[in-house]
Image (cartoon, rainbow, N blue to C red; front, side, top):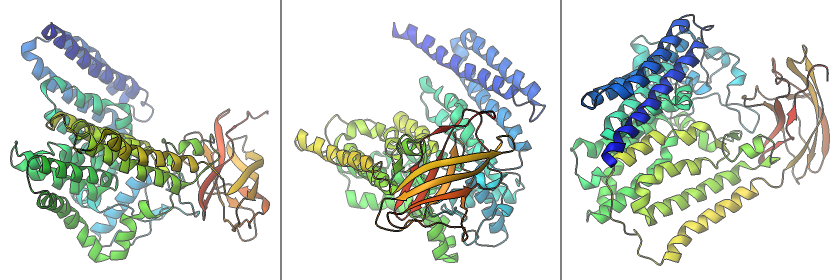
Length: 554
């Protein structure tokens, strides 16, 4: 009975792969105004999808494996055809991180230290750069390289080889193709459809074809996850034992996100070593050595070049007061549902949840061995910056763990009473809930929007009048932004004061007019928008309720 069902299920899933190709083709057709070639490419991709859905059901079993290879190749070709022309005709980056990487590579090939450079809008391929900056709570924006050196080391050769047009975007797109190829190769026969479905997923395609520099570390995270327990079990080829930790080190050298996975790999290695009677300390030291080797090799030259600049740039996201942003818990405040958020409380809550997840990884290791990387986004959902990429970047590597790691006996890793095991997980989790709750209480400033205006027939914001009341015993320097829909803020609004700055004394109430940054677009009619007030001391974000932008005659 099962043998009869399996071909139907398999063919049904591959039908959905070709349906996704059809959907990409219809969407690509809508981009004809950007490049006229889409008038042909769009229908061709759509037709390919329709024909593919038919072939799914008529190809005989004897040729089905070859058809699966063709289907995967078609998914890669579809994403390239739909996004390559957009990259080729685009002249600007869509993220500041991609623009920073490009500028850093240009400086590096000229023999200049990219970590000491201050990036200005005139140096970057960013249209309306203020719309892309990463802003800080103290009223400034990030204007220096803020990542480890891995992306530079890996991407600069492509620049030297002649790929000068939006180098970062092109390399990131092909890194995503490499990730899909890895998943396709390591997937068992009946799960080969995972790779094309992931590469065609609109979220991944949009991110990795539009300046999301996380794409560069994704394939290395997948290699780090590939048979990672073989470092202990030694059941596979010898090269798999060092490939994982070396790839993990490379991933950690590209961006800070993979750093969060390191504790789990180390704890897992320790548990596996103990279970197989291998010296734990010596095994961990070897694993750490393999991880550290590429980190040192890639970053040491830049550290020697300018230690302070490299340390500042590499650890900037963890030390600088970046504004709260993202699709996680923090959106309760950034969208006006809660009127305040204290970023450090959310950071504490995330750290406590990380402890709880590590504890559950140890206690329920047989189950968590395959599931922990799917669970890690739960931690990244909580901090004050929980961008959508943080929630999805580990999914490809999580699938690699599920598909390639070996099972362990169904026994508990800790021989302790059940109530104690549950308590080890429950206590940090409950403390995290308390910290997260306090994050949305006690705003340092009361914020009230008194009046706002528009110019050019409601196309741009005009001045607005805001009343601020200091609820604390210290003077506070507020910084004001306006958030429109899901758009990135266009910069800080300037208080209409003689000095161009504003300080609200303890328990003082101040009403001030704020002037918008240049070309600050107004919302569409009836679109939601609100006012954000940010302070660095104390660290907090306050908002007004959400407002609807009126029609011109209202």
